[in-house]
Image 1: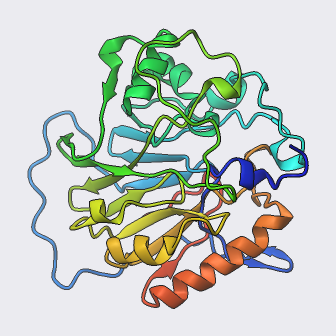
Image 2 (image 1 turned 90 degrees about the horizontal axis):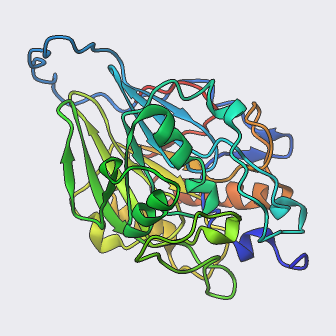
Length: 330
């Protein structure tokens, strides 16, 4: 498969972000994002339950489509992929039998706690670290039925796994999470890497090919007296499912093939043109998690085109180019 563009095989790498210049990423990601101020002062905060801390909500990008969100004393993770194993994908020698090697030395310093893990789909660069994190933290994992059965295969207790399909609104008190049915991006051949679902518990996965796409979800996080943020994990959209969401911020995966028609126009219109657009899944996720993020040469032009498209389609949206592990406050 060396003759294939890595993203043409893995239409999984769909992320939208980062303004790119000849010299690399522009240094706009060091400034915390600020959503437009509300038209009127927000209502007074409700009394805080005894024993619960309050504080600013922070968003930290972990590369690919991964995020850590700290809300007072709770931590929500989205597609936490920290091992960033080498599969040859970015070198033009993709190995579908690459072993799933969880890098606990990379994960442990960064995942001191987690209450909730949200999985958009179950490709390795979104799911492979999730079972270890669930075991380490006791977090509840939300994902498709495939994610549920794969979690069981890894030995995650059923009591920690919640299968969702889209339409659910989950209330956590100071924040809620709405599950949105979505779609995975397609490659130049109109197909998806590692397609398929798991309707029963399989054998424990051993290679990246053992983790199929398994259907795709989006998630809308609404924080009490805070922002509403939509998370994507792949660059396709079922825009009819977005009606009424209208988030303040959208984490948008970059498109890497033109086979999905009008991806950004449909997504941004469906989300009612968010105040802030944060491109994700544009980095080389097989390099160490250190700044500045590494961008494959072929992806620089795609990112540049995407930023220009967002600005053209939604001129009032601010485009924020994130850096790894930087705390952003919207």
